[in-house]
Amino acid sequence: MTDSHQEQPSTRRHVDCQDCQAGPDGGDVRTISVGRDMTVTEIWHTDTCPTYTIERILLEAGAAKVEEQGGRAKDAFPAAHQRLHEAAATIPADNAAAPFVTALLELIQAQADDTGRFVTLPTWTEILDRNFPPQDPT
Image: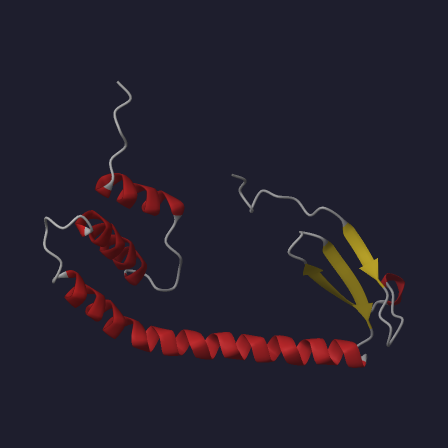
């Protein structure tokens, strides 16, 4: 398995804007995007370029949508978290699913402790190792 944070962009390419024909030498605006294949693409625009204006509008709309969704999720999370605990309480301790439920509850609690960040891999590993201990190789 590879760590996606350590992958380097495969290529860097410059694309000419079809609307304004701006370039790096004119003091114009540069936009950079990274594709799923890790290809970095840069495009230069003038401040008045219609394509650049559309890109800014879409970016701002996307940011507003993410903020709105985050606000709704933050409001709804405590009730959903409570429902999960209530449902988990109905599972008998000797049920085969019990260790999975316990691990899930711990992982979700780790996220609930700070909803402004993601649970880190070391925390995941600690919780999973506690609930599913590694087998002794001897």
